[in-house]
Length: 294
Image 1 (cartoon, helix red, strand yellow):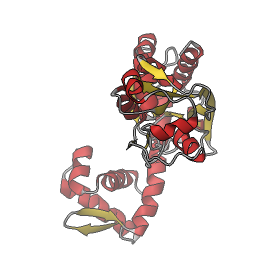
Image 2 (cartoon, helix red, strand yellow):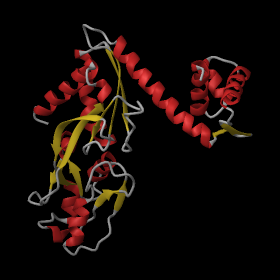
Image 3 (tube, one colour):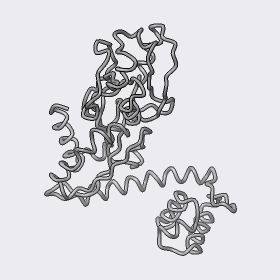
Image 4 (tube, one colour):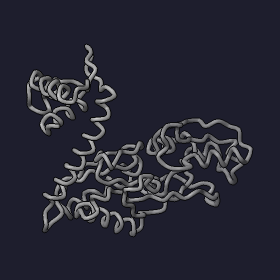
């Protein structure tokens, strides 16, 4: 199979049309179409279903695209490692983590990292859904559980505790709960049922139910940061991770003796990046900052 044709095929498969692939490759639509037709002829199988709204991969096209994506991901990783400076960490580093951790703990510390390593360019993707590191959707990840893929390197970063908070205004109006059963008289804010980024994220609500509390939550929201803002507004009570403590100034801790689950967070990256200086200095920076008082 011709590499140029595979490159064009990959672009078309990702873009879903000859026109958009041509814009990416700086080729005309007709040139892209000719390359795909030639590849299909050489393989003697159709790779795309063509219809008025665009292109859809055939079963054979899906099979080829999985392999081509992996090959191009490996090539991109190899290129990055080969071009990385021998003297100083440099180049682009794509990091992914959850929305809450990235926006509240990580983001305020990135300036210090980039001041230390100005030749590194950071790209940060905040998403509670996990990106595929093996397919180079990101270089490294900070995840709230051990990696499930066997070919990923992991380093324990921190253990997260939960703290139950409410605003002073809310407690002045509704009273302060002294035990878990008291939550029957309070408004709870919980995480919505959508790809929870942390195991046992609604442990407070579940503990209340086990204690006989039948009151429904006042709000479900698929954002821990959004839950924090709702608590701050005086809407109700929520359990928040302790790495958000800097964001909780002015809030009041309640039910401090309540036993909460722990969450272990990990720094994760592909085996191929084990010797990358960019990855190493970013990992060490995180560990140093986490060792300080959070």
